Image (cartoon, rainbow, N blue to C red):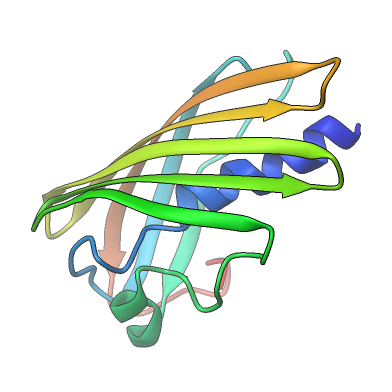
Length: 145
């Protein structure tokens, strides 16, 4: 159970933490659909809606700095593509997230993320593709903040 909890932290850090150096994102409601391989069977990730405030749009979703035990490195940053790496050490579990975020259009962003968790005797890698589609400028109640 601990692996899954830590894994989700690293996964979300990789998927949601689009670095600010990347590209402009419209504020408003976005729908996120994820496809994953390498997850334990039986775990389904439903589509979710995310509210991107104007402040978050300027900072690449990150309202806060990553945890102090994590280091973020921008590998490449262009007007429509960013590649990054996040390395963390949390409670003896080491995690590495490598990802690319590609702006397909003003209304669509695709993220490809590889998350590896190493707990010494146990190592797991998960590949994730997240497709984010712009819904509109107003956020619904069901959109995550």
